[in-house]
Structure formats: C-alpha cells, structure tokens
Image 1 (cartoon, one colour):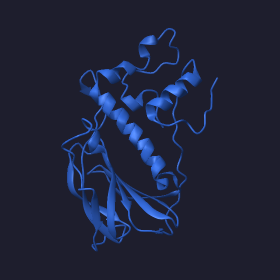
Image 2 (cartoon, helix red, strand yellow; image 1 turned 45 degrees about the horizontal axis):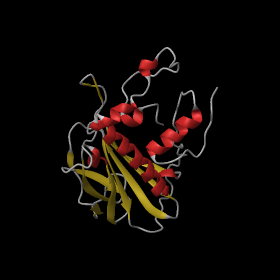
Image 3 (tube, helix red, strand yellow; image 1 turned 90 degrees about the horizontal axis):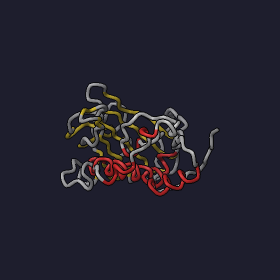
Image 4 (cartoon, helix red, strand yellow; image 1 turned 45 degrees about the vertical axis):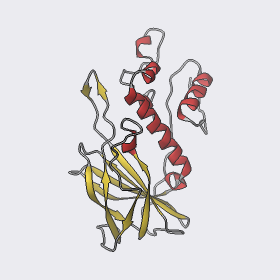
Length: 226
C-alpha cells in the first residue's frame, strides 16, 4: 500500500482538510528540484511494472525461506503452481552493502537478475552493486532449499527530514528462475493482497488521472469514500 506522497518520499504530516491545512499538501514541485524524489518515483514506477510483468508476484505461491535479524535480510520465494518462472526476492535492510551473501535457491541452473534497486541511487547509477545479471545455483544445499549461491545486495534509499535520517536503508534484488513448470509442493500458501493507494482529495477523478500518469498505470478498482 502507498499512502499519499510515499512514492516521492514525502515527509510532511498528512491532513485530510486542506482548506485549513494547505501546508500539508503533497510537494509535487519537489520532483523538479530534489533528485532523490525523482529517483524514488522511478523506483516505484518500475516496481509496479515488475509486478505486472511477472505473474508470480501476484500469485498465491509464497514462502519465506530466509530471515536473518542480525544481517537484516529477508528472502521471499514466489511462484505460480505448475507454471514455473519462480521468483526470489532478496531484500536487505542492512546499512552496508553485502557481498557474497548466501541465498537458498529452490531450483538449479541460472537465476536472472531482473530487478536491482541499487540502480535507482542517482538513477541510473554508474556504481551499481550487482551480480553481473545473474547467479547460478550450485549443488551445495541451503538451510531450506536443495541449492544455494551467493549474491551481492546493495543499499539504495534512506529517507531524511531536515537533513536527519528518519528511516532505514533498504536494498533489494529480484531473481527469476529459468526452470519451466517448476512447482514446490507442501509449502505454506497465503493470499497476496492487491496493490492499494490511499487518497484523501476533493476531486477523485482528477487525482486518479494524475496518479495514473505519474505511476504509469491506471487502477483496477476505484472505491470512493465519503
């Protein structure tokens, strides 16, 4: 879910009554003067397109094979049962780049790097921490899956207010398997919630049009409030 302005790192408090609290309106003009806001908007747009491009990100197949509190890493496996093209999302909340971090992989062969958040730090970044476009699963078993390899995961964004950090850094990779018709049986299933956007505006239709243009897609469902 995106709340008002989160897609551009808006740092002002939110208020629904802009008649008396107009100072809390989203600072869209910041996109013309703040590079980090532009970079993060591009990051959000591309994440939305990634979710539309890879159906496994919208499917019900989900498992979390790795969570490491000390390293601040979480790995999420997504798939469509019987259709293959599994995806592995590697998210890092660490404050430093992690090189050669061991990642469990459910299938052998080549895993293509289809998304790297490090690209968006001064987009397009010329000093990206990545994996040369792919990683290869080797025969060394992981803790949860029969294959593993190491991956590099960089640090991408930190939100700041008045020059002071208010949120943690985050970086992430999305790896896609080249295996066809792969499926993992007996794993926990959870329904994946849809993408939501919360708006408090005076003209809903105008705002939907504006957001559709900024985010590069229209909403699948609009539920107007009172």
